[in-house]
Image 1 (cartoon, rainbow over the protein chains, first blue to last red):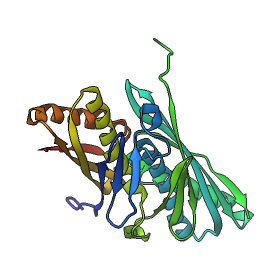
Image 2 (image 1 turned 30 degrees about the horizontal axis):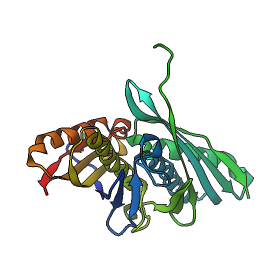
Image 3 (image 1 turned 135 degrees about the horizontal axis):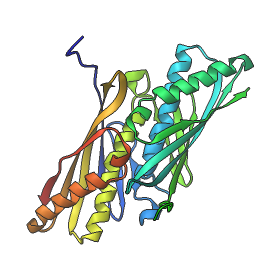
Image 4 (image 1 turned 90 degrees about the vertical axis):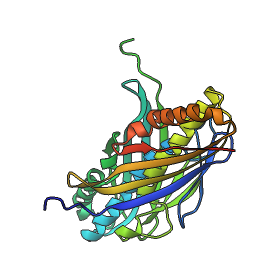
Length: 147
Length: 147
Protein backbone atom coordinates (compact mmCIF):
# COMPACT_ATOMS: atom_id res chain seq x y z
CA UNK A 1 0.00 0.00 0.00
CA UNK A 2 1.45 3.35 -1.01
CA UNK A 3 2.47 5.56 1.88
CA UNK A 4 2.48 2.74 4.45
CA UNK A 5 5.82 2.61 6.27
CA UNK A 6 7.24 -0.53 7.85
CA UNK A 7 7.56 -0.70 11.60
CA UNK A 8 10.67 0.97 13.00
CA UNK A 9 12.85 -0.23 15.88
CA UNK A 10 15.37 1.93 17.72
CA UNK A 11 18.77 1.02 19.20
CA UNK A 12 20.36 3.58 21.51
CA UNK A 13 23.66 3.79 23.33
CA UNK A 14 26.14 6.23 24.85
CA UNK A 15 29.92 6.45 24.74
CA UNK A 16 31.75 8.54 27.32
CA UNK A 17 35.45 9.32 27.10
CA UNK A 18 37.33 8.34 30.26
CA UNK A 19 40.95 9.25 29.47
CA UNK A 20 43.68 8.31 27.00
CA UNK A 21 42.04 6.63 23.97
CA UNK A 22 39.35 4.83 25.94
CA UNK A 23 35.71 5.22 26.82
CA UNK A 24 32.73 3.50 28.40
CA UNK A 25 29.90 2.22 26.24
CA UNK A 26 26.50 1.97 27.92
CA UNK A 27 22.91 1.20 27.02
CA UNK A 28 19.83 0.99 29.22
CA UNK A 29 19.70 -2.25 31.31
CA UNK A 30 22.80 -3.68 29.58
CA UNK A 31 26.23 -4.19 31.17
CA UNK A 32 28.73 -1.37 30.52
CA UNK A 33 31.62 -2.16 28.19
CA UNK A 34 35.01 -0.55 27.85
CA UNK A 35 35.92 0.44 24.30
CA UNK A 36 39.14 1.90 22.87
CA UNK A 37 41.21 2.68 19.84
CA UNK A 38 43.07 -0.53 18.86
CA UNK A 39 46.81 -0.83 19.66
CA UNK A 40 47.81 -0.57 15.96
CA UNK A 41 46.41 3.00 15.96
CA UNK A 42 48.12 4.07 19.21
CA UNK A 43 45.32 2.71 21.39
CA UNK A 44 45.07 -0.07 23.95
CA UNK A 45 45.42 -3.84 24.09
CA UNK A 46 42.76 -6.16 25.48
CA UNK A 47 39.84 -3.76 24.97
CA UNK A 48 36.98 -4.07 22.44
CA UNK A 49 37.38 -1.60 19.55
CA UNK A 50 34.93 -0.08 17.01
CA UNK A 51 36.41 -2.42 14.36
CA UNK A 52 35.79 -5.45 16.60
CA UNK A 53 32.20 -4.34 17.25
CA UNK A 54 31.40 -4.16 13.53
CA UNK A 55 32.76 -7.65 12.88
CA UNK A 56 31.01 -8.95 16.04
CA UNK A 57 27.77 -7.38 14.87
CA UNK A 58 27.86 -9.35 11.61
CA UNK A 59 29.04 -12.56 13.29
CA UNK A 60 26.36 -12.45 16.01
CA UNK A 61 23.59 -11.42 13.60
CA UNK A 62 24.23 -14.48 11.44
CA UNK A 63 23.89 -16.59 14.60
CA UNK A 64 20.64 -14.94 15.74
CA UNK A 65 19.23 -15.22 12.19
CA UNK A 66 20.20 -18.91 12.19
CA UNK A 67 18.40 -19.35 15.55
CA UNK A 68 15.30 -17.78 13.99
CA UNK A 69 15.34 -20.16 11.01
CA UNK A 70 16.07 -23.34 12.98
CA UNK A 71 13.00 -22.74 15.12
CA UNK A 72 10.89 -22.00 12.05
CA UNK A 73 12.17 -25.08 10.21
CA UNK A 74 12.34 -27.40 13.27
CA UNK A 75 16.00 -28.27 12.75
CA UNK A 76 17.48 -30.38 15.55
CA UNK A 77 20.92 -28.89 16.22
CA UNK A 78 23.11 -29.20 19.30
CA UNK A 79 25.83 -26.62 18.75
CA UNK A 80 26.74 -23.43 16.90
CA UNK A 81 30.14 -21.73 17.06
CA UNK A 82 31.39 -19.20 14.57
CA UNK A 83 34.75 -17.54 13.93
CA UNK A 84 34.71 -14.25 12.05
CA UNK A 85 37.53 -12.16 10.62
CA UNK A 86 37.21 -8.61 9.32
CA UNK A 87 39.82 -7.02 7.07
CA UNK A 88 40.53 -3.29 7.44
CA UNK A 89 42.29 -1.77 4.43
CA UNK A 90 42.24 1.24 2.15
CA UNK A 91 39.63 1.17 -0.61
CA UNK A 92 39.44 4.24 -2.88
CA UNK A 93 41.88 5.98 -0.53
CA UNK A 94 39.77 5.57 2.63
CA UNK A 95 40.14 2.91 5.33
CA UNK A 96 37.15 0.60 5.65
CA UNK A 97 36.30 -2.95 6.73
CA UNK A 98 36.33 -4.28 3.18
CA UNK A 99 35.59 -7.94 3.85
CA UNK A 100 34.21 -10.07 6.67
CA UNK A 101 34.50 -13.85 6.53
CA UNK A 102 32.26 -15.82 8.88
CA UNK A 103 32.86 -19.52 9.52
CA UNK A 104 30.07 -21.17 11.51
CA UNK A 105 30.50 -24.74 12.73
CA UNK A 106 27.06 -26.24 13.30
CA UNK A 107 26.52 -29.55 15.06
CA UNK A 108 23.36 -31.49 14.15
CA UNK A 109 22.05 -34.81 15.45
CA UNK A 110 20.94 -36.36 12.16
CA UNK A 111 23.31 -36.67 9.21
CA UNK A 112 20.29 -36.50 6.88
CA UNK A 113 19.81 -32.84 7.92
CA UNK A 114 23.20 -31.84 6.45
CA UNK A 115 21.95 -30.24 3.22
CA UNK A 116 19.02 -28.54 4.96
CA UNK A 117 21.41 -27.12 7.59
CA UNK A 118 23.70 -25.77 4.86
CA UNK A 119 20.73 -24.12 3.20
CA UNK A 120 19.59 -22.55 6.49
CA UNK A 121 23.08 -21.15 7.14
CA UNK A 122 23.20 -19.75 3.62
CA UNK A 123 19.82 -18.03 4.17
CA UNK A 124 21.03 -16.69 7.53
CA UNK A 125 24.09 -15.10 5.92
CA UNK A 126 22.08 -13.59 3.10
CA UNK A 127 19.11 -12.33 5.15
CA UNK A 128 20.92 -11.15 8.26
CA UNK A 129 19.90 -7.52 8.71
CA UNK A 130 23.43 -6.47 9.63
CA UNK A 131 24.82 -7.97 6.39
CA UNK A 132 22.21 -5.76 4.70
CA UNK A 133 23.52 -2.72 6.60
CA UNK A 134 27.26 -2.93 5.83
CA UNK A 135 29.27 -2.20 2.71
CA UNK A 136 31.78 -4.91 3.65
CA UNK A 137 31.60 -8.04 1.53
CA UNK A 138 30.27 -10.78 3.86
CA UNK A 139 31.28 -14.35 3.06
CA UNK A 140 29.87 -17.32 5.01
CA UNK A 141 31.68 -20.68 4.94
CA UNK A 142 29.87 -23.30 6.98
CA UNK A 143 31.07 -26.58 8.43
CA UNK A 144 28.55 -29.22 9.56
CA UNK A 145 29.33 -31.77 12.27
CA UNK A 146 27.24 -34.70 13.48
CA UNK A 147 26.88 -35.23 17.21
CA UNK B 1 52.12 3.09 -7.46
CA UNK B 2 50.16 0.48 -9.40
CA UNK B 3 49.96 -2.87 -7.68
CA UNK B 4 50.93 -1.56 -4.24
CA UNK B 5 48.33 -2.57 -1.67
CA UNK B 6 47.68 -0.67 1.53
CA UNK B 7 48.47 -2.28 4.85
CA UNK B 8 45.77 -4.64 6.12
CA UNK B 9 44.60 -5.10 9.71
CA UNK B 10 42.56 -8.04 10.98
CA UNK B 11 39.80 -8.19 13.61
CA UNK B 12 38.76 -11.64 14.80
CA UNK B 13 36.11 -12.88 17.18
CA UNK B 14 34.01 -15.92 18.02
CA UNK B 15 30.35 -16.34 18.90
CA UNK B 16 29.17 -19.51 20.60
CA UNK B 17 25.52 -20.39 21.12
CA UNK B 18 24.70 -21.11 24.75
CA UNK B 19 20.96 -21.81 24.71
CA UNK B 20 17.70 -20.01 23.86
CA UNK B 21 18.54 -17.03 21.64
CA UNK B 22 21.79 -16.15 23.35
CA UNK B 23 25.51 -16.64 22.87
CA UNK B 24 28.92 -15.65 24.15
CA UNK B 25 31.10 -13.30 22.12
CA UNK B 26 34.84 -13.62 22.68
CA UNK B 27 38.06 -12.26 21.25
CA UNK B 28 41.66 -12.86 22.30
CA UNK B 29 42.62 -10.99 25.53
CA UNK B 30 39.25 -9.16 25.63
CA UNK B 31 36.47 -9.69 28.20
CA UNK B 32 33.70 -12.06 27.04
CA UNK B 33 30.32 -10.47 26.28
CA UNK B 34 26.87 -11.97 26.22
CA UNK B 35 24.91 -11.26 23.04
CA UNK B 36 21.33 -12.12 22.08
CA UNK B 37 18.43 -11.54 19.76
CA UNK B 38 16.60 -8.38 20.96
CA UNK B 39 13.29 -8.79 22.86
CA UNK B 40 11.25 -7.36 19.92
CA UNK B 41 12.33 -10.40 17.86
CA UNK B 42 11.55 -12.98 20.56
CA UNK B 43 14.94 -12.61 22.22
CA UNK B 44 16.12 -11.33 25.59
CA UNK B 45 16.11 -8.07 27.57
CA UNK B 46 19.21 -6.49 29.05
CA UNK B 47 21.68 -8.17 26.67
CA UNK B 48 23.70 -6.51 23.88
CA UNK B 49 22.32 -7.37 20.43
CA UNK B 50 23.82 -7.35 16.90
CA UNK B 51 21.82 -4.16 16.18
CA UNK B 52 23.27 -2.49 19.30
CA UNK B 53 26.80 -3.51 18.30
CA UNK B 54 26.49 -1.88 14.87
CA UNK B 55 25.25 1.40 16.35
CA UNK B 56 27.92 1.19 19.10
CA UNK B 57 30.58 0.59 16.46
CA UNK B 58 29.71 3.85 14.68
CA UNK B 59 29.29 5.82 17.92
CA UNK B 60 32.62 4.63 19.38
CA UNK B 61 34.49 5.05 16.08
CA UNK B 62 33.51 8.71 15.89
CA UNK B 63 34.88 9.14 19.43
CA UNK B 64 38.19 7.37 18.69
CA UNK B 65 38.55 9.37 15.45
CA UNK B 66 37.90 12.57 17.45
CA UNK B 67 40.58 11.51 19.94
CA UNK B 68 43.00 11.09 17.03
CA UNK B 69 42.28 14.57 15.65
CA UNK B 70 42.37 16.42 19.01
CA UNK B 71 45.88 15.10 19.62
CA UNK B 72 46.97 16.03 16.10
CA UNK B 73 45.44 19.52 16.36
CA UNK B 74 46.32 20.14 20.04
CA UNK B 75 42.74 20.87 21.07
CA UNK B 76 42.26 21.33 24.82
CA UNK B 77 39.08 19.44 25.66
CA UNK B 78 37.88 18.13 29.01
CA UNK B 79 34.93 15.92 28.13
CA UNK B 80 33.30 13.89 25.35
CA UNK B 81 29.99 12.07 25.67
CA UNK B 82 27.89 10.92 22.74
CA UNK B 83 24.37 9.51 22.39
CA UNK B 84 23.63 7.48 19.28
CA UNK B 85 20.39 6.10 17.91
CA UNK B 86 20.06 3.61 15.07
CA UNK B 87 16.80 3.04 13.20
CA UNK B 88 15.96 -0.46 11.97
CA UNK B 89 13.31 -0.53 9.24
CA UNK B 90 12.49 -2.12 5.92
CA UNK B 91 14.20 -0.58 2.90
CA UNK B 92 13.53 -2.22 -0.50
CA UNK B 93 11.73 -5.01 1.35
CA UNK B 94 14.68 -5.97 3.59
CA UNK B 95 15.28 -4.91 7.19
CA UNK B 96 18.40 -2.81 7.69
CA UNK B 97 19.78 -0.14 10.00
CA UNK B 98 18.84 2.71 7.67
CA UNK B 99 20.00 5.66 9.70
CA UNK B 100 22.28 6.34 12.67
CA UNK B 101 22.24 9.72 14.39
CA UNK B 102 25.19 10.52 16.65
CA UNK B 103 25.08 13.45 19.08
CA UNK B 104 28.43 14.17 20.71
CA UNK B 105 28.62 16.72 23.53
CA UNK B 106 32.19 18.03 23.73
CA UNK B 107 33.43 20.17 26.59
CA UNK B 108 36.31 22.52 25.85
CA UNK B 109 38.19 24.94 28.09
CA UNK B 110 38.42 27.92 25.76
CA UNK B 111 35.36 29.42 24.09
CA UNK B 112 37.57 30.54 21.19
CA UNK B 113 38.04 26.88 20.24
CA UNK B 114 34.31 26.43 19.50
CA UNK B 115 34.49 26.62 15.71
CA UNK B 116 37.66 24.53 15.54
CA UNK B 117 36.02 21.88 17.74
CA UNK B 118 32.95 21.77 15.49
CA UNK B 119 35.21 21.33 12.48
CA UNK B 120 37.12 18.48 14.18
CA UNK B 121 33.86 16.69 15.07
CA UNK B 122 32.64 17.08 11.51
CA UNK B 123 35.90 15.55 10.19
CA UNK B 124 35.60 12.72 12.74
CA UNK B 125 32.11 11.85 11.52
CA UNK B 126 33.14 11.98 7.89
CA UNK B 127 36.45 10.12 8.17
CA UNK B 128 35.52 7.49 10.73
CA UNK B 129 36.36 4.16 9.12
CA UNK B 130 33.17 2.55 10.41
CA UNK B 131 31.02 5.29 8.80
CA UNK B 132 32.88 4.30 5.60
CA UNK B 133 31.93 0.65 6.15
CA UNK B 134 28.17 0.94 6.67
CA UNK B 135 25.30 1.58 4.29
CA UNK B 136 23.35 3.36 7.05
CA UNK B 137 23.16 7.14 6.70
CA UNK B 138 25.30 8.55 9.53
CA UNK B 139 24.37 12.02 10.82
CA UNK B 140 26.48 13.83 13.43
CA UNK B 141 24.97 16.68 15.44
CA UNK B 142 27.48 18.18 17.86
CA UNK B 143 27.00 20.31 20.95
CA UNK B 144 29.90 22.29 22.41
CA UNK B 145 30.11 23.21 26.09
CA UNK B 146 32.66 25.39 27.89
CA UNK B 147 34.08 24.14 31.16
